[in-house]
Amino acid sequence: MKLAVTLVTADPADLSAAMEVVGYGVESVGGNVEASDLLGPNAADLMVEAHTLQGVRGGSLQALEGRAVDVCVQQPEGRRKRLLVADMDSTIIGCECLDELADYAGKKAEIAEITERAMRGELQFEGALRERVGMLKGLSAEALQRCYDERVRLNPGARTMVRTMEAHGARCVLVSGGFTFFTERVAQAAGFQANRANTLGEAGGLLTGAVGEPILGREAKLAALKEEAEGLEIPLSASLAVGDGANDLAMIQAAGLGVAYRAKPVVAAEAAARVDHADLTALLYFQGYRFEDFVTG
Image (cartoon, rainbow, N blue to C red; front, side, top):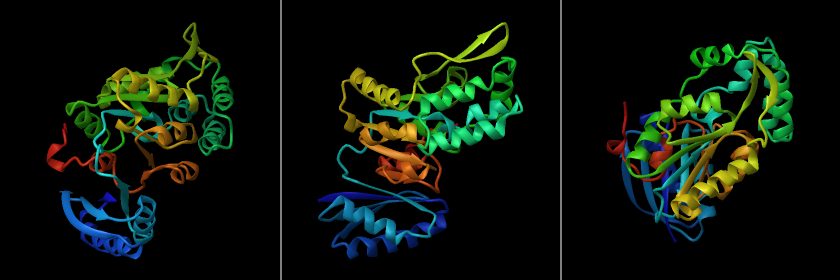
């Protein structure tokens, strides 16, 4: 079986050593590194012949233990995807919007604790969302714009990832269990072509504490992935999904390449690939893009 083992380091100085130890890791499971290819200053492909993908993945992860290196093992055919579906909070942006919004109501600690439990899969997402939003009843709607302006920032590599994929013909969709007020703005900032999210109830300039139904959660994210793929008339194998929380897991498992980004343990354990160290341009390298292909600015 031919496999591409892609390594992305947080520090370019670590790349050479990472390639060497993964080579040993591949050999330890009966594989053979046939060629290597530098994709960028902090990324490389190792082209491997091996019996099983899972064996190579396990050997690579074991070899890289304790190193700030991300790895993706996949068959090389079809690795460049035509659809990106990405979570927003703590994936494309560096915060949880609802937690930050709660800070303006003086309730960040209690709402953030519920968020954390929901993202770890300990609470049912829809019920946890209704509970948290209910705690914001009476907050001025003006806090939404303040929150976006003061707290919301794109994660490193997000804009480059989206713009590069879009420039090469991929459709990029932001799908969030958060709120359209934020996804519309984040989608525009990062370059997504479409966004889906929940709506916050508002009346008389105040939040009502209600969420529009039906709530977009785990199953709705999976449905969005399938609907977008059907709209493009492509198989799910041509899609990439990325997220960090339990409500992202279904779409991550269904996508051709599912990536856990700085993810909760329940998600990291099940995803085909993880990004724990590098920035979001790792997802471009995983697809075989080279640094000179990146669309920046």
